[in-house]
Image (cartoon, rainbow over all chains, first blue to last red; front, side, top):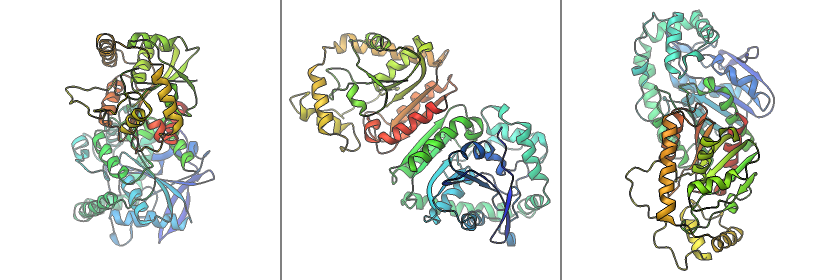
Length: 293
Length: 234
C-alpha cells in the first residue's frame, strides 16, 4: 500500500479544505466517491492512496477531500447538496490555480468530476470516469447489494462488510482501509453531517431529490455533446452496484461526440478497480496522460 | 517481444490481409500459411523464438488463443483485436457488409471497396495499403473454405470456449474492439471477454472509438496506447 503524502490545507470559498499532492507536471485531480453523512461508510482522500505516489512520477497528482467528506469542512448554510460539492470542487481548482487538469472521478466522484468538467472547460483537459453509478444511466443497485448491513452502523465490522460487498475480492479491504474510514467517521464534523442527513432528513428531503434533478440535466448535457474533452470510462467488471451495462451505456453517450473516447474493463474487480488492480489502473492512466501530453 | 498475427481467410475474405495490414505497429508480423486453423497455428508457432505477446486480428486472435492454450510457456499475453472469428455468434443473421462486391474480385477497386466497408473512415486507405492488398491477393493460396477451413474453425472455437469454461486460458488476455465494427458489434467483443474472464484474472476489454474492424489502422495511437498499457502491467 502506497502512503499518501502529508496533507495540506487551503481555504476554498470559506471551507477549510484538506488535500494531498505529489509530483510535477500536468495536474491530475482525483475525486473519490460517496457523500457526506453516511453512517456505515465514509470515503476520504485515502481512497486514492495507490495512485497518488505511483503516478506522481508522471504528473502532479492531487487528491482533495470534497465538501463535508474526509477532513474538509461541512458545506455552509446546511447546503448538503451535490451542487455544493461540485461548486467546492470547481473552486478548489481555482484556489489551487490549476489549469489543463486531468480529472479522474470515481462513483459519486465520477459524477462530480463530469459536472466540474462541463462547467469549467477552460481548466479541464481530460476526464476519466470510473464505475460511476451516480453518473451513468440505468438502474442503480446499491440499495439491493448493500441493504441493511448485518452490523451496527459506524462499527468496524459494518464498514468492512460494506466495502467487501463493493469488491470482487474481499481481502482487498485491509485494516488500513477500515482504519481510514473509521477515522473519518469519528470526526465531530462528520458526525454532524450524519445527523443532518439522517435525523434531520436532509438526505431524503434535499440531497437525493436535488441530485436526481441535476443528474437529468447532466445527462442531457452529455447527450448534447457539451463535454468537448477527451474521455475514458474505466469499469470493474464485477461491480454489483454499478453493473457493466451501465458503463457501456455511459461510454456510448460520451463516444457519440468525442473521438478520443476509450472504454476499459478490468476483470475480477468490483466497484474499486483502482484498489483491486492498482497496477493495471495506473498503467492505463500513465498511457492516457502520455497520449494527451 | 510482440508478434502480430493477421486475420482474414486467403481467397475468401474480400480484402487481402497479411502482415501489411498492421501498418507501422512495432513488432514481428507473421504471414499465415495453410488451409486450416491447425495449420495456420503451426505456421505461427514456427516463428516463435521465445516468450512473446501475441497480438491477433480477427482469425489471428483465435490462432493466438490456440497457441496460448497449447504452449502457454511461449506466450506472455494475448491481445485479440476485432476477433469476429472467435467471438460468439449464436443464431445470428447474415452479415451484408460484403454483399455484392464489385468485379473483378481482389482487384484494386474491389480492395478499396472492401476496406471501406469494414472501416469507420476511409482515410487510412492509401495507395500503399491498396498495393499491398493487391499483391497479397495475387499470392493467395487456394483454401478449401467449406470442406476444410470452416470445420477447423468450428473445432478450434469450440475448444477455446471449453477451455474458457474449464481450466481457463493460462496467460493474461485482453480484447480490443472498434466501436463501429460493421462485422460484429462491440457487444460481441464483450461476450468474448466474458468467456475469458471466467477463469483468467488478468483479462481486460477495451473499446476504441470511431474505428471499424481495423482499429489499429484507423486509430493507431489509441491502439498502441491500449496495447502498451496492458503490457506495462504484465
